[in-house]
Length: 343
Ligand SMILES: Nc1ncnc2c1ncn2[C@@H]1O[C@H](COP(=O)(O)OP(=O)(O)OP(=O)(O)O)[C@@H](O)[C@H]1O
Image (cartoon, rainbow, N blue to C red; front, top):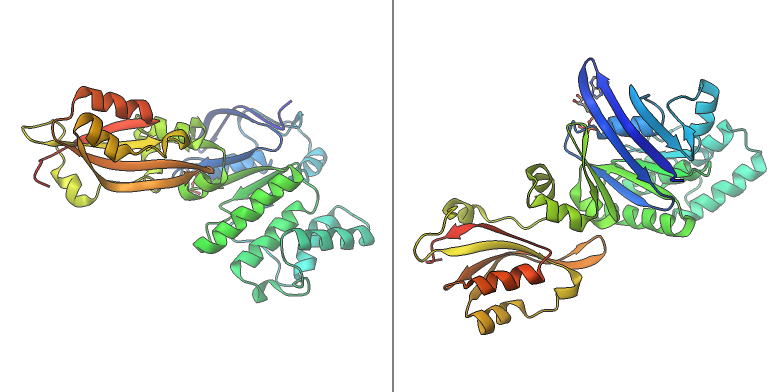
């Protein structure tokens, strides 16, 4: 049985669709990124997953228990199995670091001694040793989020839901928090769902990505699937635009849809880890007499694997065999257009 089973959920606000027939399963120990543009339905999905909102249609099963049909008392118990990490940390300034982390344990009526032990373990786990007595205002943003993560873990949840957990942090702190979450997933086997509008965050963190668009689930796969499908699907391509090489504006202006005499094709390729060592440019020259220039891009890290993602201008007369070769070594290849050969 999956840890989380989401079955045909739909939700509307005043007749306006926020979620439209969304279904997916999440297995124990998975790290899943949920991405979509503003208004795509991410927050509504998150509120349904943590049982703060009841979808008007469909069911959500957590470990087999149907969150959409539980009574108030059972819901409180079920919510304890879900840890929430917020964008703006939501810490209480009236409490110390230790006091904030202990809050869910106090609410659950955990004995004091057990509370103290658990809080000490969590402080160590999130890398805040020596900070237990500080107030939130004495901490950096990254430290505040570490407190938020420790508090979310306090009651021993089965699922950690992170709502834009890195969106208020600078890039270096974002990396540190993503590393912490990855470490927690590895060490505790905890299932993590991270909701974000930042493609760069899911690219580095999630092996599986769900894409929402206008309340619908339009993609469920790996970053490599996403890049492949983004070639066809403009909505997905728009989301990927943050992390994929783009044609510089000056090139964009000169781009023609159709070839003209002497024009040079411009292609975008992703080359998977198996072929990134290939001497691509020299092979194009020696085997096909095609000169290739890198316009943008290079080798990037996509979900932990080296992938070449680049835009090339090919010159000379490109024989069909050269395109066949490029297609064979690439995960995706698309012709963006053609530029006059003089540049
Ligand atoms: N409480 C509400 N009342 C009315 N409409 C709402 C409410 N919450 C969400 N909506 C609408 O539902 C749709 C989905 O919104 P939601 O907040 O879930 O999207 P989102 O992807 O989280 O967006 P953002 O990234 O901007 O937070 C939007 O059209 C939004 O205007």
